[in-house]
Length: 197
Image (cartoon, rainbow, N blue to C red; front, side):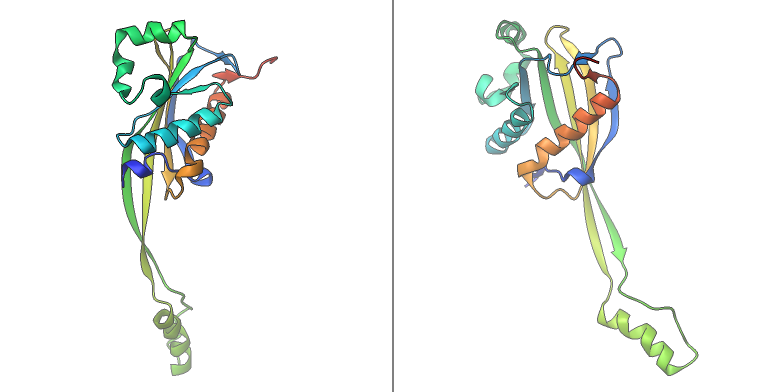
């Protein structure tokens, strides 16, 4: 079940925890023509779904690793792969992976009124709602996903971030939502600049 939830997110529950950029690199939006996208997930079906969503977010510039590298994503570590990517016009590589998952339990009290002990009527009004709608324990799950962007020309890491997502629910839109949060952060940091600016 854990691999299935790897990149699940709900946009309003996702935010950047930390990020780093190479201060010597600035990218003009849209200047990367091809970007290899990799979801580090052992389950092949989930990996393909994640990579498809990453590629969709990139509006035709994304190349899924399962199509380019095949089932063996470890081929990215082969020295010849870098040369092959440059020859094929791949400018960058985006890798997403789950780095941590935490659970936190919170007690949610039931409905209650101020305590009135002066009369049986006031006390009944205070105690009855707690009896009728008792509290409960809610478990929140937080997923931390690391997103790294590598340049094939510089052959190194040029930007990285960790996102936090509270109570993920849907894989279908999750990758795009995480990518959107990452993209917005890149623009806010001046790492990506709009063309013409």
